[in-house]
Length: 181
Image (cartoon, rainbow, N blue to C red; front, side, top):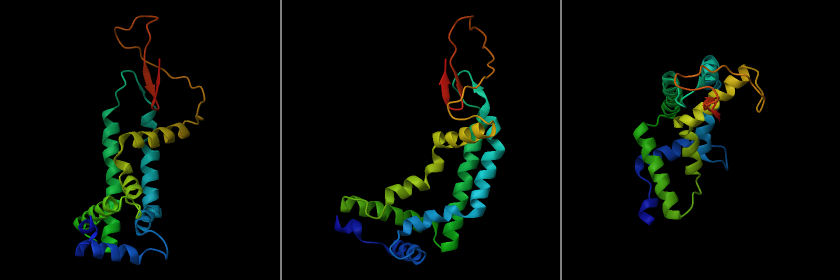
């Protein structure tokens, strides 16, 4: 367990750089995450979401999603990845050194039997954009906002009945992430 806590030279450099931007008594990991509050980054994310939200108002009869939604998710992830790269560049930290540092943090948390440095919440926040369901929640919320629909409000939707479905037969549809029959 003690060996897992020893920090490599690259990890030490990352620790020092993150510590240099951390307010006294704060977490160096939180300081890194705070860089996502950057106004340009927030504008980029908000613009991306607002410009594509209307496409998420579609009704999905078979439970599948439009291929464009997957493509938008990839683009959304790229915006986050670019922000991580920007932060690392500004701090003059290589991606390899950062990955090594995160591995050290993980080893430290496992060896100590606790996550006193906050690695797991950090990784959760850092990788949130990778989660397709979270992405959908963001897009559905904005689509609903743009459409003026309050949460829980009754909304009338048009559904094209697929071939082979008879009158009176239940039809399951998905709209804004909710399943209806």
